[in-house]
Image (cartoon, rainbow over all chains, first blue to last red; front, top):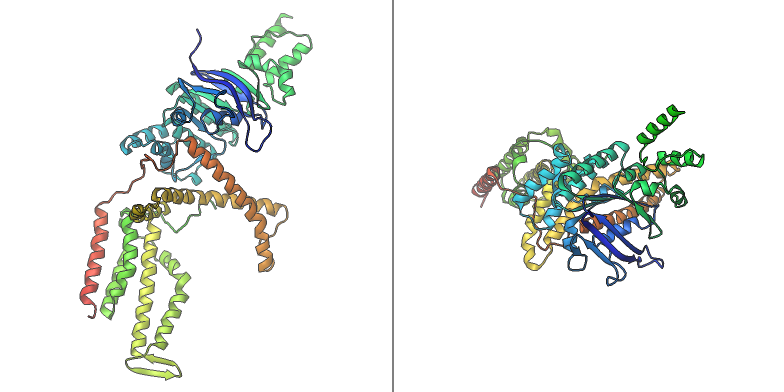
Length: 283
Length: 265
């Protein structure tokens, strides 16, 4: 059974005004509802550009050829605000997306923009703050919060709007490992709770390895896509693009090069360790 | 250093803290006008008494208010001395050239001294008990009539609140840049005025560029979160009048009434 598609992009191209080469070069892709998709690629490969196109912050070169469909809605000038209700983005820099003077004010910002009544806002805001575990800091000012806490507030601001898709634009790259794990844990929780689709731009290879789908971008092109197992098996391609490969994949690859065959279905460090132990005991 | 804020707000929970910032701001502004109703010793005693009661009602240390007066104490003393020696009229006690010590001069000097001091005291009461954000909200409320002449009051309010929110962020940024420049040998503390002014340039330019990129990021985030101007926006933070504001109003009206009754007509 094929799952419902939530993001469908066809022939998407985009060139920045001051540039001669396209930042996004004729990309088509499909993202399933309820999935977790990681986009990897080195800096300048077009990862951030493609998500900014997805919620209409940028407009494709030729809107007649390029088509972006979010759910049942095709992104046009008229539907852009509708799309932004469905797609929430958590950006990289925790400080530069904190608009409100306090945590509650910031979470309410998106609701204020949509003309939600104050009585409803109070309820929605406190629920959203609770969902990210920031209730104790509801009246704190941003300068007293850590980067991870600010990102949690940004997530609360998005779930308050009940979107269908949450995009993490390197949202954890400026955080310490603890903050990063907390954010990922919260996103996993709310993904289940609200049946969200997650699209994460990331440099964290382990995070990519635990997602449902991985997209690899380079120079504005979609180089390869598939399950982490399929993508990370292409060790040589990824190395050529200057990207990391999960550690167990590197070992698996080296073992294969040394004529020790590891079955394809091994897709985590744990499985590999188990397999190697058993392999040893047979000898 | 990220705790630096505009104003001198000090947390507390006395009566004055519970008053609406709009009432406090209005009372402070009007106070500066009604102070001119005082024109004889008894009215000045009344106004001093009412100010001191307001100061006491904050339940904060007196030292804080002294800190408020200290920066302007010389200005107050200088103005009082001018009054003391240049006012003519009444009994002349002493005179030399253009200087004269008269009974009018003495009373005027005391009046001016009281007038300045209570204005500083009352505005200190306002700023230490009201957060900058509340003051911004109150200013916005005072600006509402300007909507009639198409002044974008809501946008100004958003700008004020974002500006306040980014003050600590920019301070952090400044210290980061300062440390980065210091680690490469920049010297901000020595040399003459010109040398120091020059040392500021490598601080200001990165700060300015950072602020611009922050502004661009912020506008992207705001747009992505559905901000499209004031159209159809609702407000989350609203101010409520309460019974404490009746105290404020009552206190103010009694003061005005007493001044009107006891002033020399």
